[in-house]
Length: 133
Image (cartoon, rainbow, N blue to C red):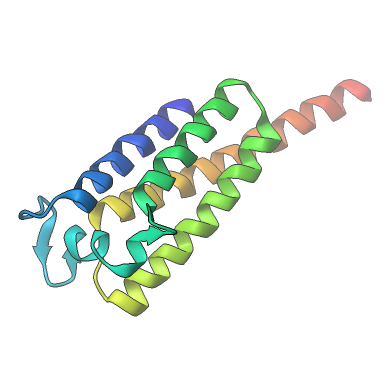
């Protein structure tokens, strides 16, 4: 979980670099895949804070919670992150009609973290229940 969160920090950092870059983007593949369009859109900031910076902070929180073995909090935070990522994917698909490769990778990371934290939390509860019986 910690390694996945750190991978999320790395991908979000790459997206943040694109947000502040004005040159040709490394992931400008074609008219449907262009990180520059996504990261320079009006949806790339919330209250003047880049979404990628929010992602970095979120992944750092997830890394800390996972490292501290706070299973339920890790699950809750990953569900919130997944919901936010799904909203952003909706913006890419339905509003901008262009995808950011870094964002899609981040979406995969947070989805995997959510699934793993669900299993991690469930297995810990099962072990606790088995000890009580």
